[in-house]
Amino acid sequence: MPRAKEHAQESSAFPVGSSMADTKQVSVAVASDDADAEEQIRCFVGLGAGIAKDVRRRWPLYVDDWKVGMSVGVHIFAPATYIFFASVLPALAFGEQFRDETLGLFSIPHILCATAIAGVLQSVFGGQPLLIVGVAEPIVLVYYYIFKYCESTDAIGVELFRPFCAWVLILTALMHFILALVNASEYIHAFTRFSGETFGTLIALLFFQAAVKGLKQEFEEPHDAPIGYRTVNGVWSVFLALALVLLAVFLMGARSWHVGTRTLRNFVADYGATIAVVIITGVSYAVSAPSDASWSIPTRVECVQIYDKTVTGTWKTASSLGDVPGAQVGVAIVPALIITVLFFFDHNVSAQLAQTEDFDLKKPPAYHYDFMLQGVNTLLLGLLGLPPTNGVLPQAPMHTRSLMGVGRDRSDKDASSVVLEQRVSNFIQSSLIAVMLFASPLVKLLPRAVLWGYFIFMAIESFPGNQFIHRVVLFVTDLTSFRAGETQPAYVELVPKEDTYKFTLVQLFALGSVYAVTWAGVYGIAFPLLIMALVPLRQYGLIKMFPASSLRHLDSAEDVEEVFEEEGRGVEHRNDALSKQASELGGAGAFVQTMHPVPEGEMKRQKQAAAAEK
Image (cartoon, rainbow, N blue to C red; front, side, top):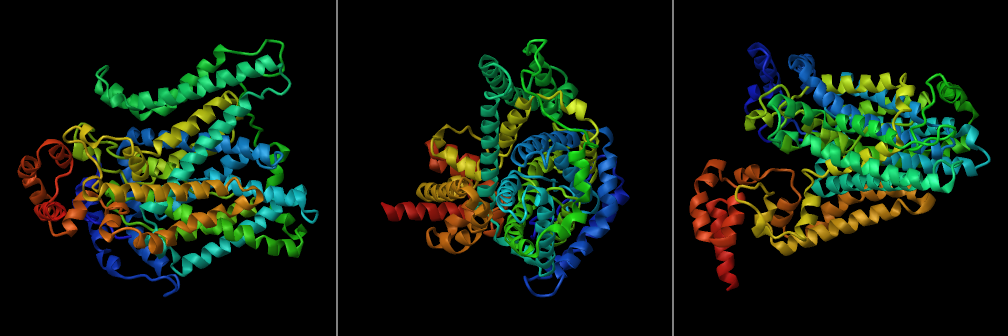
């Protein structure tokens, strides 16, 4: 995808400590790709052309990706540990879900292993190292339906569940390779805010659902405890989960505190989620079961050792591929197709949201190459008998956001908005996840409530920057209540209110439809197809329902400055007209326009439209 402002102020993309020679080298390397940026890659034309282009653009920057990450020293550990917890806690929760839904055939070690392998591959060999990969909630749903199919099919049964899944992933990988070779990721231009943010909100909704389901289950645990103790366990778990959410949000806002030194406030903000997990885990021991009980309150994470037979048996999956009947290998094409559709959307959207225009990244994307690598990763995990991974939400954009201002003076607004584009943080967090494979005694200290609370926290963390959520909030928002200087998206001023509301209602209906399908029993496995249907709905349906100008502002990844620049109006000209526009509008209008002044040409068009209405 083209980046507006991609090559502007290259030197600002590098942290203090990078040499001028390094900066110049990367600036030249990126600038040399301008010709490549003009090269038009088309779907189904030029086999592997997209992959070749991505390699040409990213390879000259490979060494710099490591040097930049190392140049900030210990500061890189803040985003690394932040995204480590954002990855490992869901992995633990998904492991608990897998254990319950596959009769222990998949559990926490399998999820940790798959996440670590995929993360190292992406950080070392990936085209876009900012992309975070892992097991996602949608694949938990898909595997649940696959397990139910195997369990009810005599030709497979529970015994051949893992080999059958391996065949599914082998076929999925083959489909990935085909799509990557025919440049299918070029179609990502059709993945607009409408589809991307609807999917991102679905993921947040699934996180909330998993948290509620998990907390509800706490009222039924421990199974061998008297009912009174189960109630205590449930109430205590709800308290711990909510306490974790509130504490993490509070600590991560430490930079706005007036207490403590700036260094202390920055440390607390950087490690807020980590600190919250440690504190709440400690607090959880304030309530416990009787000393002679065989169960615990609150219930804690169950994690088998890496050398347990339920784990070591996984590595022999490839040798059992021949045990799956040929007819069932043919059946495996169906879930393989569904997973391919899911990953094509999920992986590309995660990559897209990790490098949106809002982050103003300087280095180019690598959608085609990364999707090919996703195929390699899927094939490897399938042969190892592990569940597949892909780009995940909201961790991918959370990672990029956490890298803003790393190694810089955060009191400098310009410096604090610069993203540190490197490979080190992703490599560190993936390595830490691998270490967790040998830390099962430590994992068992965690109350399950922490996992459910962290799900809620991650869902909340995905909201910033999501204009869909912003528009939903506008339903109950008085625009005149905004303070002067408050930043709002361009559509707040440029799109008629009725179009904004109608567009949001359509998006809510789309979200509700996809979410409803996930509850449709065995047919719920088809929900990725409905997710993909959001793209043609936007391309061919919404253009008939809304004016082009409204769609442009409601469903654009551009920021307001770029919108005005494309209209032939520079940002300087727009700001110069601020005082004049505010005085002409007066009252509440001046309040809103001060937030995002419009160029004189737009102002004139608005006045003419108002006069025509009168």
